[in-house]
Image 1 (cartoon, rainbow, N blue to C red):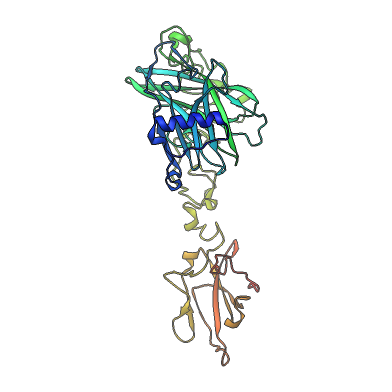
Image 2: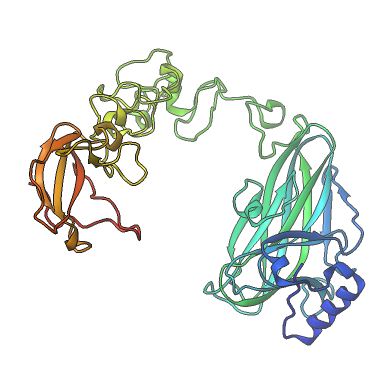
Length: 442
């Protein structure tokens, strides 16, 4: 683990005390600090057990309490209790990091024990910033989930994480998130808060006044909580409507399995005008698997028919425009993208003379070509030029050249492919750049 020591004497003293008390925090060689996802215990954990209506509050008056510090960052950082700023009481947590790598995440995490059931868990925390504005500001993050967050992606790319945006207000500001967790038996959940490092600066923020609450979603308790509705909990939310009472609210009002315009009862409604899917079980004109699954069934896995004018696999690409399958099927062969390089380095069918006068190269299908163009030039002209057009619209992968170069001259040959989208490239240079065709075939 790497320790970053800020200029503040107070923070340095606290960090030094922690390094003395917790030997594993001693500084280690930088090479061992790269992108390490770490979590360390400062004080003994005391996991909270949420029951109905429980609220857990933390102001860090006794150090970390049940929270642990964690980081996924390549440069120095620390999280320590501090009295430099506080919102409640006299202490908070000081999050300091070297952000010159423009990358990383710092967080504090704790465990919660959830009884079996479905729970709405809410996390609220407060952050102090020395300055305001979003330029150079780092975003606050949160996490509520059934696994422990160990990387930046757990906060930014998972459904359990939350990116609140920039900590852009001077002084204290609050952030709140909520997640619904469903568990079949008593289970450990994890809750975390912190910030992401997104600008190349060194920064300190203070976190304080953290509140956790959990409300069980139990149908029959008389309250219609988020996640409950008349379809799954009429005891709390009331009986469903007798018909699809609103055709544009995104709800299945009558709980018959059809929502809004898919419900036949909404067909006369003006908001459904022009929408063919009526949910009558018949795939009628104007309906397709792409926009009316209830009537037409699921779409094909591939664009199985390449000339029917339909998007068979519902990926918004029709017939020849769908390169996943149709690019190598009639009638689309060679017409989806321009040809690839013909007989590139490493090809199983390189460009060569099969006898004294006959050139051969790879077949048309390999480069998605319909026809070919043959170029010939002098080796002495390299790399400025790659020859001029010798023959175009060659229908097969072979061509005879009965001419011979003058004494002391060596010729080079290149072949390009052609299809309905134009001529392909002449290949690439050793540096990977596309060769320039200075004299394209007409």
